[in-house]
Image 1 (cartoon, rainbow, N blue to C red):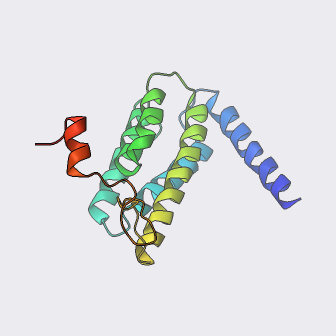
Image 2: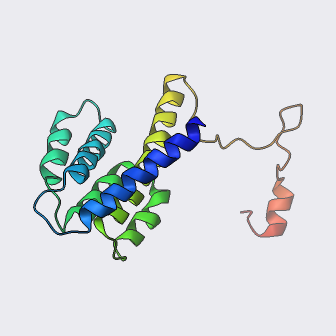
Length: 158
């Protein structure tokens, strides 16, 4: 029941945002609130860098035609390179501002969760990367060890 209510509230918010941005006007209050939330989330990627917070805030002032490219530029600074293909594809498409912000906010949430998970692993002393350790037998001898003779036969020997 709670999940269904949350889903309905989320849909209602995006519907209101779509309605608000469908009519050209000088003021977009809901969109501005969402932009402020996005700015806050971007600043959370670098919580102790007040200089970067100021750059984000001054760069993302107001709802403008350049907002989409500016937002893409900022998320690409914080996301894993695997996501670059997604965000580069956005700049080739024509979205309404509400469509883009919905897509962007969802992606920002994913990236934020990934970064938080990685930071928690660091705090716990876990290795973020898979170690490059060969598979071994119980005697700790690598299973795929090559002898000098097998290297010469394959052409890799000297």
